[in-house]
Image (cartoon, rainbow, N blue to C red; front, side, top):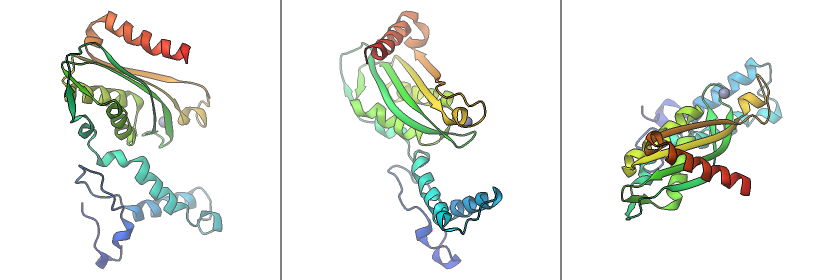
Length: 216
Ligand code: ZN
């Protein structure tokens, strides 16, 4: 898919030309989003031409560029630079804030990610796991698959001996609509390698995350 040329009446300015590094993918079709949002406004009984809504389709289009920016980035680029260490004990990074968009309702869900791995000689810089969460969360998602994707990425790229990913999040599709249960937290986990096979390793991870909560 190529961005349309100016000759067909849709200028290049109607495409988001921000191509994140390593993408090689087409930019986002802003005009198509604008038209769709306008249609939604009409469909729900609104007047898209009233003053307050005039710029809404454009704002929503640009918002989607940001919320779904992870579709055009390969998260593994953030795990490419590793350091060789002798350390083979668990590395845990907890309380990584994230927000994503549920693919069933296109409503946000947000919470915290906890990631642990058992290195096999390779570790990454501290900010890199947060970068991975950032990319993966900026896609339409379900929380379960998000946990799995992060776990598989860390496992594969770091050739880790084990990975444990725990996500806890509140879903606005459960709090503002449907069952309307504010305060409900959904917890998902994905365990690989040593975290899957060794209950003691898994228990150690759980204890680290839980102790962080009670003390903080
Ligand atoms: Zn949902």
